[in-house]
Image (cartoon, rainbow, N blue to C red):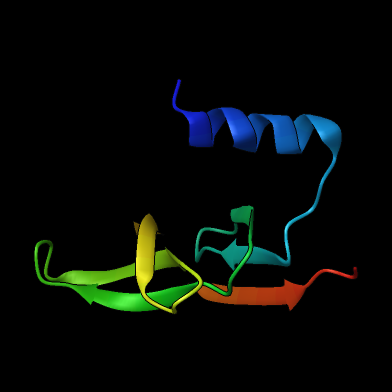
Length: 82
């Protein structure tokens, strides 16, 4: 297990919330929810030749892929209260 994964697990167990809660509503009716310190973004991947939903780092560039973007998907992102 990487240090980042261990920190993520510890954050969940301790109940610490990150700055944003993002909910992805898929066309199938399923929902995916995740938290992030920065708002996510949708970016084009030349490798896959498709749109992907990415978590972003503090500088606004894509840092980690969340999922391949599916037509009809709705992304809602709200700032958590401090």
